[in-house]
Length: 242
Image (tube, rainbow, N blue to C red; front, side, top):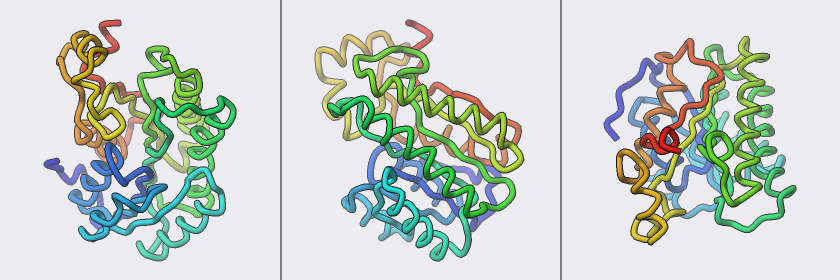
């Protein structure tokens, strides 16, 4: 992705969760290109080695585990020379994974709230900002997966809470990706269902991970310094046709 600096101060720190692949990886690489010090976190180590080879700090971390979060945040703070100014809450289970509703909500929503609170308690610098990867699911359309729709709506409710009541400490926003060409949706565009659904997207294709990373980085950046509490659909116009 061709990334402008977007007004970021070179050397500022950022944590990107779920950075081993897909949208998270694109955000981590885009932030690195913009001059930020990046700590890329993922539940699995595969995918992080390549990022480490490009000079990014990495941490294997289950963000649903409080002890693991604390350990990763401490290591990140030490490696980056201070508490990161920016946080991207991108990690979360795929909608295609069969999960118990209550457990899925605990993982999906609890991890976002838990990591954000850990980060705030650590004391990020002035001008801090957080973006969560939500979804058009639950916020614009209902999906077959009850826990996925509920969780994605819930994390945006949390974003609005932060924006309304903690704006003295951070700006908080969320994006709502539509169908995105990541490993989780490998082969979808070629499937019968994929052809049917993508025919209803005005741009007639899936989004690319870098097309999600750009809006995320903008919302974090000083260029968006008066943007707070928004839900930004990034879906090729899909939901306006529903």
